[in-house]
Image (cartoon, rainbow, N blue to C red):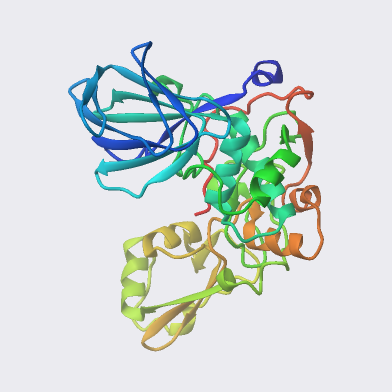
Length: 383
């Protein structure tokens, strides 16, 4: 797909509460007014502070006001009267925290649940993703960098869920999106300041726009993390994140449990193997933990023991093994805590992106010729 198609994409359809089997939900107008359209016909107006109750009835949605039934429909659309309108959506079966959303809402039944799809302006969506993924207490230049990455992922993955009736979901399968950005005005401002800007690789494809919480002082290569190398996702020394809280961690495991674990993965450990044989130092990132001719990927150990990262050293004593770790997350791409510190000391968003991603261009999606990368790219996730 070229930018010619993407340039006309002003809204995105995002399945919200996507990982929850919603059966009943309350929809209210927090700000502004909405037209309620059922099966393509006008049903009623929804004014500020009014609420409607929606429940799943077979393959249809039953709609109630606070005082009476309104009707039963296959599809219900909440159409915002203007850009300032805001919906409050509160699932009650299951009972979930309410969220606020800009723009429009489309409701139907699919996959044995109420399917809630936010038809949202791209800038509003990107700002919501930035707040969901990065929090509300960072510098504007960091938010600009995160907005460019969120937008890059969006345009590179607009067909991720098309067979299901929407384009993206709101979970880690795509990008975390917990509703509109309302906690820090710097976030929507940063989004607008970078409007249309995305990151392209040398071959004019959208990059795999990955990031993580903290790299522990050195980012990881994509080839080590996912066996899918990218020339822009290579190890980068990062002094900016090492004093952050997530930069260091440790976990203690009984030596007997460690031996049993290694033996279950084919390690040959003769009786009387000294504790020192288990020691392994990761000053720079390594792919494998080795004892003699036996090896195991650090990322597998991380998964099996639910560790914060795969960047750790092994220090064995007579009774226990200490995993002395660095960083939080997969370590590939942008280090959020490092990027936050860079922004704090004066780096601009483009300098931040060029520090963590190599051989890239930051371009306007509406004026550059960019195509999607091949399928089966790694997911956007901090973990």
